[in-house]
Image (cartoon, one colour):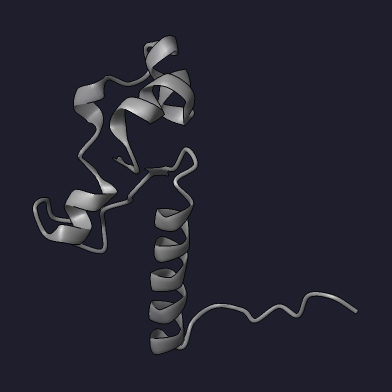
Length: 86
């Protein structure tokens, strides 16, 4: 599990609900997104790993994550293009 900001997610994000239900602990959080981006913590190390990302409203990180996912999908030739509007 990766979160944008641990304290914020523990108080108001999906992580908050998992903590309250006893389904997760703070120790289950691998890293904050900034630590992964900075290289202080590794991201996925194999294609078998699944990353859960909890974002609680830091818009700049949301845009950066979406842009990276989009660029990687384009480079890999995967995904579906959807036209919005009329």
